[in-house]
Image 1 (cartoon, rainbow, N blue to C red):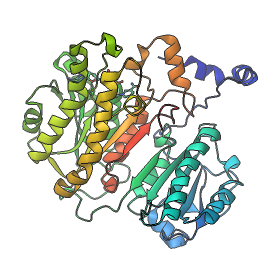
Image 2 (cartoon, rainbow, N blue to C red):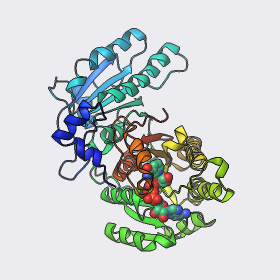
Image 3 (spheres, rainbow, N blue to C red):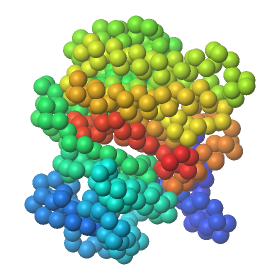
Image 4 (cartoon, rainbow, N blue to C red):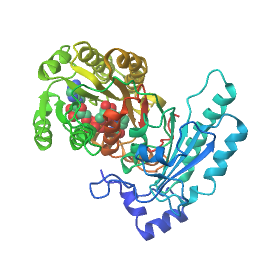
Length: 444
Ligand code: NAD
């Protein structure tokens, strides 16, 4: 469903009229294309406080490969503020001092990335000001406008966060804003023994990815993006969607697997279809059966819980225990902002998607320690798909505009976020729930 309002505000009369009426001014977002794979312009590095990351050293910046410069730039495409060394309120003023003069000049669809340190539970002053960065980031995200995004990365090691920074400083993260992402130090042994030499343009070369519910919508975009990044994809969907699944798989040079993910033996059947193992498991299949609780039948409740949560728990357990998911593997599950903020008419759906968050947070440390597999979730906001095209017009319009970017996301936005989490370089990203919602006003 085309966003006519976005097209209208892209015209001169549309811009004038909507500005006069004080209506939202969405900017056309710059997304990844083969012709324009990176943001155009400088990536300016600023520092607040005395940082241990070592980025003030030019050689260290070069080794990181992110093209960060400390030379002043008239119109930076991105600004990275290293605030990891901020430990008290006085030094927090340096965050203001660093960004205040440059924020206006950041290019349209540009990026602000704040680097923070993990909260130190033994130092409440450090914890207070590092937490302050979260409120700062989210507030700046809400006011910056013009398709620009603002995110906070908590890290201790810039190299472990390289894939994350590369993602956030690229057009691939167009619809990710107001997020706080923690990146730990990647355990040294979490690379798959079968890894071929790393190719940054095709990081998933030699890897196998299975995407559930990939015959259409977000799942189809995820399969496409993982294939673009070099993965051999398995397109799983219900037997009724087999034809569409085959069409997608054929286009991507992958294979289709007709299987209802709620089948009790789904895990065993996936393992049987993948005798050589699996590297990336994307739980994308999902359904809605909306009714207010007073009108919700037990069948509506259980069908949603079964597809969206129980099958995710069952198949993840089965594929980890059977060893089908190999070391260096990735699980990416799909939550939703409805699971974080709640939504009227969606007690079943909200419960199932909040369950995904619980699953990810609890399983992630254990899966990494015992199997060398990371477990993360994406939480889409309003994304333009058949699911959201079915929403009545006025609610749909509200859903589209109620975020800092004043527009809906596209399936590709969720797909790009999944591809970053699936990247072999993302071993330090574990147990995270990353919203792909344009910084929706719903939920924190
Ligand atoms: P969609 O309805 O367009 O696609 C879902 C796919 O999952 C379909 O191809 C369907 O056949 C498949 N599927 C359903 N039940 C299945 C089962 N039992 N076994 C195997 N496959 C099954 O939905 P979408 O909008 O692309 O959403 C994809 C995911 O993103 C879902 O988990 C959804 O809850 C989540 N999500 C979507 C939005 C949005 O705005 N579209 C927002 C938040 C979360």
